[in-house]
Length: 267
Image 1 (cartoon, helix red, strand yellow):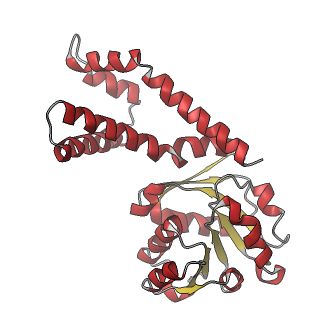
Image 2: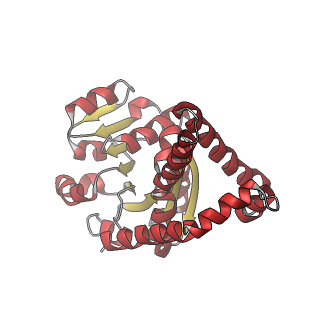
Image 3: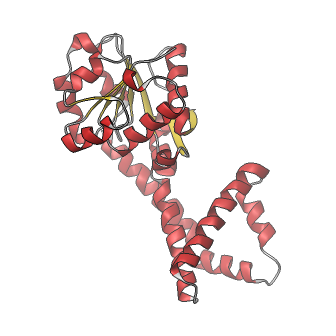
């Protein structure tokens, strides 16, 4: 079945999902409509073979499934531009940060369905983590379609709506923490005499390989850490230094701070 898919907002995340859908051949480019206020962005999107417009309501009119890929501050303005007639019977997939399903319902007619999703930026290379809030209003068939669309850019999970702030903090914002860790490792390598390029390559591959080890072995990260730490060795010395600097506590505190910010934004 070839779905008609719309995007309100044609930024990086929308484009990542769009390209994933095209790569998976779930639907044809001619069945996708993207609305974006930027003429420059529409020119780029035109190169992908999709339909583009500056009119948000046209993207909704031409589609069965519509991704809301806009900034939170633009939500109210966008819905003021949409007609009730065009929204009826459509499935809206929101990737807007901090926009609850309940808030989204207030903008939509009863006949429209909602699926709230928190993706993350590795979706840009089809290695993302997309998490669906379980307070969706879509039926089973519609939800299966949404999952298939999101699966084109990575893994998909469903969690309780009450945990979406935690999801935002762990996977939504998580790539930034990983980038900071990799950057710090690379800077240490440079301090110790490695070239910047070599240090970064070592750090990236080490983190990539470590993540794969967790996934493929099924072992707890702490158990794998212990396997690397020989008695009185170099690794345990480094681990002790990290613990003395409050490494675990700082990560936990940062993730919790992110969750609190997410919660405040959704009010």
